Amino acid sequence: MPEVEMAQALERARKEIQFLQERLTRLEMQGTNSTQPRTNLLSDKFLTRAFAVLGHYLVASLIIFVPIYALILIIALAIGARF
Figure 1: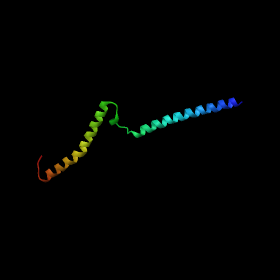
Figure 2: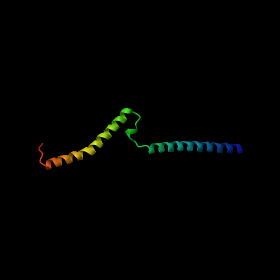
Figure 3: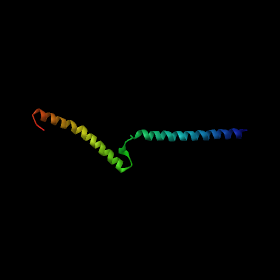
Figure 4: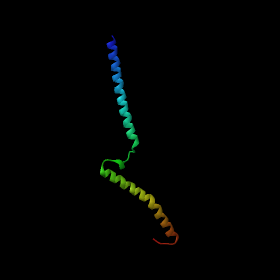
């Protein structure tokens, strides 16, 4: 009888170990996914990274230069320039 109980306890321990290993694997995957942002700037493919950089550059350029050009246009119209 003690051998049967020992075998059952061993089987429960094996199942518990397997459950904990699977849980640890899931938690490690969640940890890795949450630390890195999801962006094409971190892609493994060169062209994907290149187009992501180009897109960021174009947006930054628009944010910087559109107000400057608008200000220049307003000043030019204020002093009487004709287009």
